[in-house]
Length: 219
Picture (cartoon, rainbow, N blue to C red):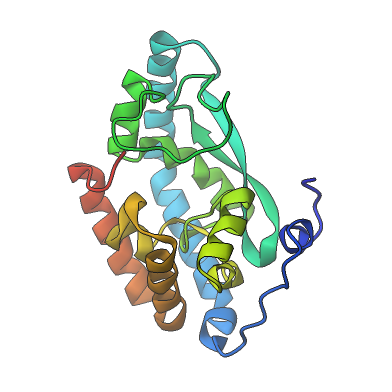
């Protein structure tokens, strides 16, 4: 199912590719500057991220059976599939009954996983996805194919978010968190797409750092 075709998500789910070119600013916004922004902050964050990832890799090993890292297929720019990298925060049989969202006090989350999720440490390996160019530091949260299709049914137009690269953090993530409805996520993400700038990206990063310390929105 998960080929490398450009628009494979839209083909797999029988949807029409998004062509909302009224969002010209989102599509044509200075991509060179955006990429420069991503690479600059990757270089700043990488030494810290490596240390934290190594430390929590050891804790994960001690806490529960299973691999330290895991990957999931997510939907990116223009419907391209890519594998997102994360530190494992759940038990290895967490999805034995099928894909589902994490909930508050989710019993599938390990002891170390709860600590990582509170500070979003499990997301740090996604810096690799940013370096590869599959993600940006700032952008819509990348969703799994099944949930993206489900949200498009619930909230028509949800796939407009696929006009830009998904982000490690974003306007929707800092304002609504994990509990936002698909409609709320779309509204936040469209606002970002229409108003994105280096200044707005800096503001989102600053608020993300604050959230990392207070654990707001974790589950």
